[in-house]
Length: 405
Image: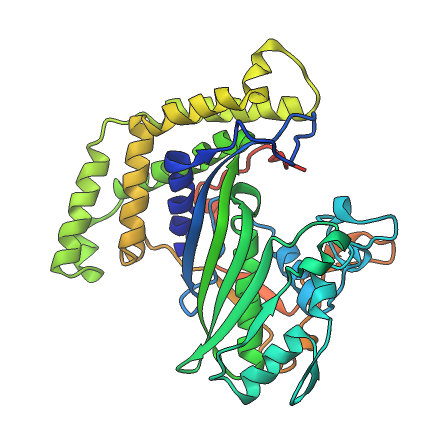
């Protein structure tokens, strides 16, 4: 389990409780059946991750970290806008007949500008500053270039970075205009955390803080049951583990005040008369129904998912349930008390880089293509992840999550 889990759940709980719905607005995204994809969203979420302590990948459900890192290398190392050079199909729908996404992402990275020190593209300029002037306060990149937007397959979501070096640690402030919390809430964090690790290694620095600002953090209407499933499943896991803890060992991890907090937390959770399973069964059944819509099945029972007003009603009911209220208490307590993770014996995930690499352009992607063009794991990859123990932590391997297009 990771600290990133609690940060993620804090964000999703905030959207479920306080999110503003765009049901009465005209929206661009559509579901596969042509229905408008509406969202609940909150404004200006800033999530902070300490990269020295962990690789911030959620263990709530599987994150394809290999494909995520492959994409970040495609953008910042290859500086490409050609999906044929990307070892996944995530950009296929935005590409033209030649495989180009236009003047977006990697194309913008590779554009050179003239400085008094010479001519650099965006990433090479950052690397130059990190090696030569790490105290410089203008280590900024930007992908949202207005004059080129009309030639982009999709406007950049993650668009701006500002690097900072403090006490030998590399920090990053990341700007994202919009984030699909279920489909990409971990994806973008994983890839830009990996970028910090890579740049820190080649510039003789240590990884520091990743501060991730999301202007529009949202959950799509048909994703609500999946989020409820994830949220309540993790709360149920904590409740079950609390009943297994040997309280005689607590003093090994906690001081007097921490011990008091933990016992109060444990007593409140274990004594709560909450039926998680009732809400979980309903959420899982709704996931199945959503899957039927994606496969083209039509019936009166599926009307709920064609009407965002009905999904909003479901969301409003869930947040008033005792199961959600207890889950929210668990999330808030674990978020505010990192020391409790040691009591549970949770291990923080770690990103392992090939430590011999000293040139950013020498990192090799975790993904590759074989001679037939099939995407495979790259045996020469420069990356590995340790203690990503999602399978033993109640990970929700739901049916395929629908993606709004």
